[in-house]
Image 1 (cartoon, rainbow, N blue to C red):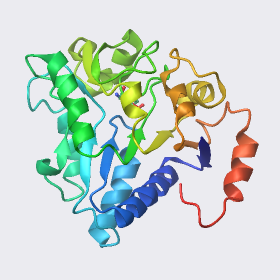
Image 2 (spheres, rainbow, N blue to C red):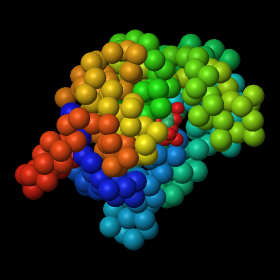
Image 3 (cartoon, rainbow, N blue to C red):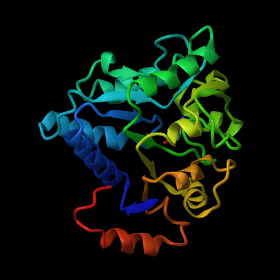
Length: 260
Ligand code: GLP
């Protein structure tokens, strides 16, 4: 696992946008897994700015969703499908044709989950999966004690996650209890995992993810099992890392030919 400590969220966004732009140069039709929440927005903004400036060609990129609420009406502005279309797909100049995600309004949720895992595999697998982290260490919507081998499936949100996400809704009551999420086993199949965490509120979860034991109680700690996982953190989110100085020195001395 590589840990990169950046001065702030904007620097994290630029760094990860560079990694995505490099990927799209190597593989123009790369399948990019995107996360929702506030944290990755600087990545999407940095990438969209490069596309607008003509320095990155994302015209053949494919975008896929990490997770989704269950039971919101189709087209609800806070469904993750709507959020990804609004924050990622449209700003990159793409259309819904380049996008895939699980159907949170399906009549048969279990079948929709299996269909999505099959669709990801049929698309050739995810090339780069962006991740945020919940304050309880969740990735996607894999809440604590999610199986590290899990596949895309329905999960029940913890009260803490519902409270964290209530800011996107008019009231806590409107936050769904159920979600579909790529499983941890599904996420680990992506070729490159890039987790961005910013702010002091993520410092404990980051320390447990990076320096704690691999444990389903901290789902993000599963990144330790991946051969190409990058954790990008700002100073506040890095503030509880015991090895912060080592991570800084390692990145400063990184060979120029190595990308993220
Ligand atoms: C939700 C999403 C996660 C995201 C998390 C943190 O739970 N399902 O993918 O990482 O929120 O969001 P934020 O970045 O806004 O703190």
